[in-house]
Length: 235
Length: 235
Image 1 (cartoon, rainbow over the protein chains, first blue to last red):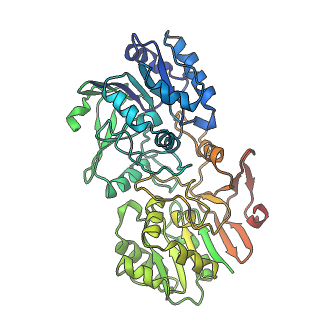
Image 2: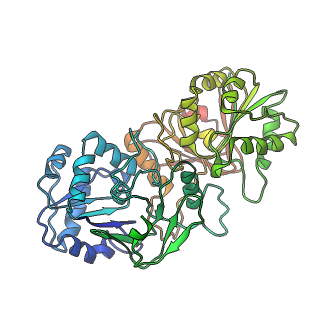
Image 3: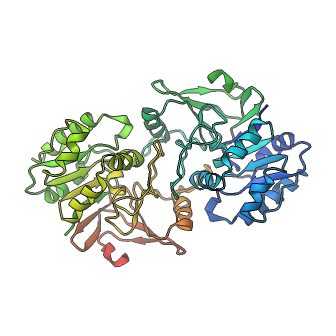
């Protein structure tokens, strides 16, 4: 029953916030009257109120109404009256921590599995995987558990970056980090490049956008999949 | 009483493992007969045995003896007989998890505070800060607590990278991530560029190496400090 749009990033270079996705978002939220925005990831520490306001003004352009931010508590009750959900990007640890703190894991999972239209960007996409074990974010807060919503049977690595050729930096590449993840974890990881997104409609998980994505499996060389690939074939 | 060498990285571009630091390491471990290597961070998933072997062969060149790896349990007992300690880089979450699992936090902290010569590279440097909240690594394993050894009163961000000019990538820069850290945390963060290291001798914490380092404080613009700066002035 799922209906989701999971994007690597909210913004692509040279464009405005969500600009490249507005058409897709129009389709996803068609007929919805009250979108709940979950602002807990707070990019650059922006307040929950300000973040919701940015989203509200952006989605107003395509005639989509986002519920006002009043308080964190109100978000917890609004989840029962909304008809669409958008979780924005920022820090994945902070986002998951808040979902645990407010006991929102089960209600959110339940809503998404029941088919409420769901939009995720970056951290909001990450939390739909099995764990947050492949986030790029800094662990700025202790999360009691890395277990995420488990809507997907794999993990996402958003903002996926290929190793830099000719780099003189000796810090691990994204690929090396994901290889380390697979020493201890078994599930697949999809490296989702910026401008890529996954459109989920019931049993179909289509990779969309102009770019390929990279699939990382334990004990196997990473490989590319094309836009238009149905990820249900990997599950 | 502390005597430490905390490096951003083990290896600099175009050189062999630890090559650029060998002279400093000779001085640090002068007179030591039995160096304990802590291999738990396992870069790229290398085994504890293999990792120890690499270190053993490298330090042999400067006539420093590293204790053989037999088992994780043996590391826990060797901490009582060694006269120097080296914690290597890799994944910081995994390293800290193992230190908690084997109850090594207190013994290690106690040894370092008592003045045993200690060498850390990357993850091995990171764990000497207040928390691992400014690591660049992926959270490939749940760590019960982000609290680290608290030998330093600040955090380190090893392999510090300046924001890329002209980058079209929209993932957060290192600076943005550390800013997000300071929304929730108060202690200072030192962005330690590759080839920089901190030499600690009793009360002195000298920044060394050819590069400047960046200091991040809550609610203050980041600023540079020069090689030769004594970090005790920041504490």
